Amino acid sequence: MEEEMHTDAKIRAESGTGSSPRGPGCSLRHFACEQNLLSRPDGSASFLQGVAEKSRERLIRNTCEAVVLGTLHPRTSITVVLQVVSDAGSLLACCLNAACMALVDAGVPMRALFCGVTCALDSDGTLVLDPTSKQEKEARAVLTFALDSVERKLLMSSTKGLYSDTELQQCLAAAQAASQHVFRFYRESLQRRYSKS
Amino acid sequence: MNLCLQRLDGRQTYDYRNIRISFGTDYGCCIVELGKTRVLGQVSCELVSPKLNRATEGILFFNLELSQMAAPAFEPGRQSDLLVKLNRLLERCLRNSKCIDTESLCVVAGEKVWQIRVDLHLLNHDGNIIDAASIAAIVALCHFRRPDVSVQGDEVTLYTPEERDPVPLSIHHMPICVSFAFFQQGTYLLVDPNEREERVMDGLLVIAMNKHREICTIQSSGGIMLLKDQVLRCSKIAGVKVAEITELILKALENDQKVRKEGGKFGFAESIANQRITAFKMEKAPIDTSDVEEKAEEIIAEAEPPSEVVSTPVLWTPGTAQIGEGVENSWGDLEDSEKEDDEGGGDQAIILDSIKMDTGVEVSDIGSQDAPIILSDSEEEEMIILEPDKNPKKIRTQTTSAKQEKAPSKKPVKRRKKKRAAN
Image (spheres, each protein chain N blue to C red):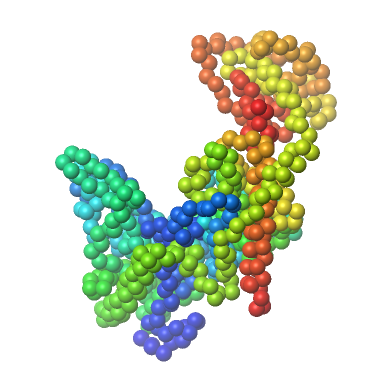
């Protein structure tokens, strides 16, 4: 028997406050998320975060495949549809976050949640988390990591630019610190969602 | 027509569902929700050469896409009929009605005009796509701002949004489609059918009208036969509905304009309702990265040093080289005749950097055996030696498979991402 489940995510990647300069120190931009906002798909989520297409698709798919317990649903196709509403930087990370929330909303069994975090290294080596489009363009290197929720291990990394291995480890450690924040956001929004049922 | 119908969602015959319009941070980006039907509209512009037969007019391009997430029936390649019908109707409504002043889009007659592109994406299909799409299109067009241009004699200056505020498009009127679903050969009529009602309707009448009660487009599909007074009645209803919707649109545009001018927060993030239990927001969060450097140094100190990568490329002919040796074949012993030579190298292996290769080199091809194989010994194949070019072209590396390491390139290639930078 063939079954089809559609898990669809809609992402809105933008910060909503225009281009406000980020002060010193790292910070994640304003987050907002809405779940179950589409009636037709099984699950949907909207995640807003302050040719390339195919490779991005592949990266997201590989990350999802690593966490989704596919063996519980044999002969099943899970389709994740992502619609970019607007791009204000850190697009891949936002796509990953939206995909995870949508999979949760659809009730797909997973071995862990995952989140995406982007780091940018500018020319003097300063680390910026969750960069805006402008920061990404001017950066020496942009690194995106997908981390899992159980042990903050690395699921996927996609990098562009030049960096040393010290910098890589630093970015990874910073991303792990930031991912705690994202997972707390997931937990709180899910708690809120299911608080009345 | 029966006026005391009870619809599935409790609406009356002529009631529209709730319309909600929200705008994004960029100009020209909006999401329209008609009940649960959701359409995303985005407008962008570009300077292009005009069409030959219309040298002084700008170009308008409309595109509606039915996203896969909108309904399980929408798969890429399986939506063509509905898609064509919707696109055609949208074009007639917006282009033929001349709601946008295309003459104002001309920059230099015959050379440069603005091409305005309206992209509509259906995100959720709960019926009446055409109404939602037409509202999204006109709202996005009204919201959009194009960069300012000035022409002085022969000189054309295009200002960036930072230099000069972008200019809105010149819009004459706002045509909006209103759909009427007919049931039982025209006996029953419903305005704004939702998805369930659409599935069982006999026919659909779409009237595109503006607030001045001018009909821009009218289309009847489904083969229902309507009487003249039915059509006239529908157009009267459409007039009323369009007036309401236009007012709603103008109010939404005004609100957005006000928020932007006052410097408040705008964008989709703000339009997520705070009270809704399925929505959640979090403010900007600082991350403590003070111990990042120490952690990183710890990890590097504990980690093993990267393995020495010895790259000794073997150049077979100019343009074909080999790095590394194939791994031992794990399929077990195969017959001699099954060995294939797909490397296609030349007679002699020219060795770069005058490093002598071991005689125990294994050519990495399918079905190779444990014993070292020398290419030129193949008795079964004809060796055709190609004369090398004067300037051999560089060949990009191919992806490496798990078992074999074929990397035909002239120079050793630094592996990206996974391995650390060797230097």
